[in-house]
Image (cartoon, rainbow, N blue to C red; front, side):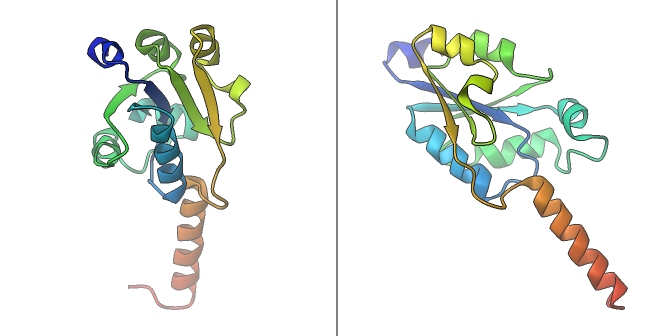
Length: 154
């Protein structure tokens, strides 16, 4: 981080579960990257996701979620956090820009105080309509149930 900061690059930080990566995730990550020079994505660990989303999540393990997110051209680094929020990680990394999806107002974003106090920016990126992992899972279940109830089970 020190070398990145010394080179004058702006460090951008965002976080989330990124369980089933969809167009909404890509939109937020690309917009986050546009806000600076080096994008760090912090992923909730599997245990952390279970605490937030319940015992049936995550659908994809943390190592595989990291592999997918890390393969995106807009992402420069991936890390994990095992706590309910990434507050301590934000404190440690001291990003110049903090980004979350539009379901969060800037003042609600965890770490807002840290980034703002250093003169950084906190951004809330508008969400794409109907883009959420929960909606995807519900659609899959509904279609699967409809498929099975129509006698088309394999």
